[in-house]
Image 1 (tube, rainbow, N blue to C red):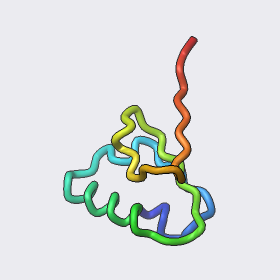
Image 2: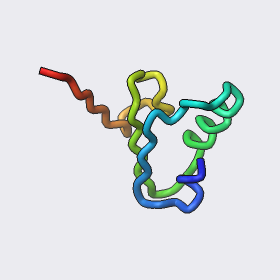
Image 3: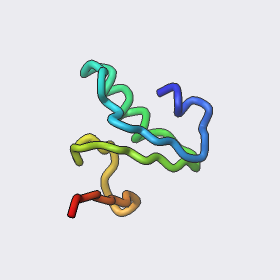
Image 4: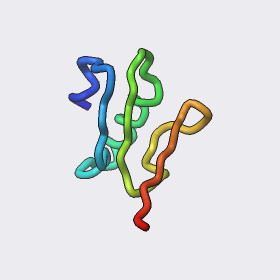
Length: 66
């Protein structure tokens, strides 16, 4: 959450929910979903359901080994 406070143009959230309890996750997801502004957020995760957004504005990329 500290990364979001200064509103940098791009934020990388790698394994974003790691080490957070359930209440913290709910609060962080709510903040991310309701925040307004011109900011790109990249969520790096193993689990698609950890991404707090859905819809057409979300671009998904899946890395796979060959």
